[in-house]
Amino acid sequence: MIYAFTQDYRDHTSLFIRKITAEGVCDDVEIHGPVKIKIAIAVINNYRMKLGILERIAHPVILIEAPEDELLEALKGLQMLGPLRSSAPDVKRLLENPSLESLKNFVAVRTAVDR
Image (tube, rainbow, N blue to C red; front, side, top):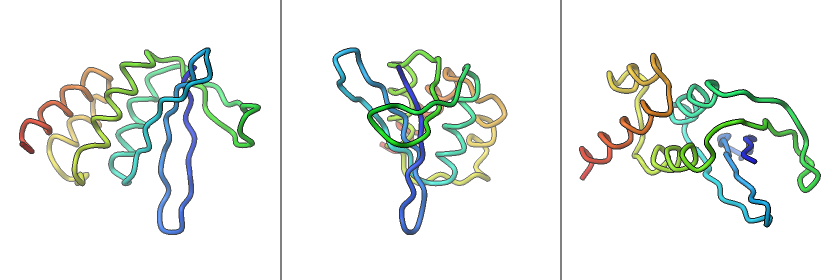
């Protein structure tokens, strides 16, 4: 199962995407920054979702029907990138076509350029 929730801090909000295995092991990514959060939400919106509450946390979550490992890997790559500007042409293109494959390509290109 994979789910999303927000965490409020004093000066910003972050988006968590978390996977819990049948054994109860967590794997997650915390997305910071308004542009990265906007990209993550745009990609996640391609999948079926429903609102729920997990017994282990007293917080509403959004359950996401998505390829768990692929989505987490792509979002971890997104979070590892430096700050993003919403006016950057490649960010605009990604937001126009926010698929998982587009996100993977975006992260790969940005990672190669940053090296």
